[in-house]
Amino acid sequence: MIRLLLIDDHTIFRQGLKRLLAEQDGFDVLAEAGDASEALGRLREQPFDVALLDVNMPGRSGLEMLPSLRAERPAMPVVVLSMYPAEQYALRAFQAGASGYVTKDMDAIELVDSIRNVSKGKRYMTPAVANCLLDGFDRVCDAAPHQQLSSREYEIMLLIVRGIRLTEIGRQMFLSVKTVSTYRSRIMKKIGVSSNAELARYAVEHRLID
Image (cartoon, rainbow, N blue to C red; front, top):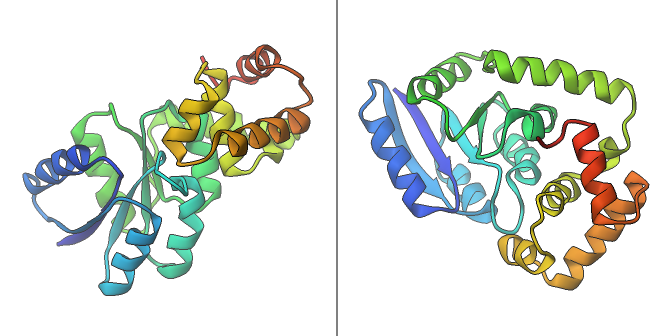
């Protein structure tokens, strides 16, 4: 039996995922968490074989949370769940210690396979994710400016280039508009641009967004 911890801030999504996994043989969802502090608390209460972690979380994002989860339970594999395409987050997820990366629109069979694979000590990635990782490592070797961004800065950058307003970004991340604006300034300085349009152009040129 694979003991699971679900970490996602959307209760409805967790409930749906829990029902899906309950229909599969060999899975037992022991606990759920909606943020970083709750997730770490659950880890300290009992052992888990695999954690499923959403990228977009209130407060500390999934990518920011990953090192803490790994530090608390080094042997526990973590599968990162994301609503965004692999090219936007997969490389950073694996660099942060993920054992698998799946998108929320993938087939249920692939999700089940990912959990079973990482529970055996393997890494899981679809061919699309593997290709993105190879492309991403090539870009790392080229020392692209966005590689200097922290996980939080990278996440905010992707929201900005999608046209999300700073006030909405702050609401999603539980940050003040002033804090988000400060992040925006840091991002632009590191990337070497001076406007949202230039930032969006950079993101497209480096295949960070479609």
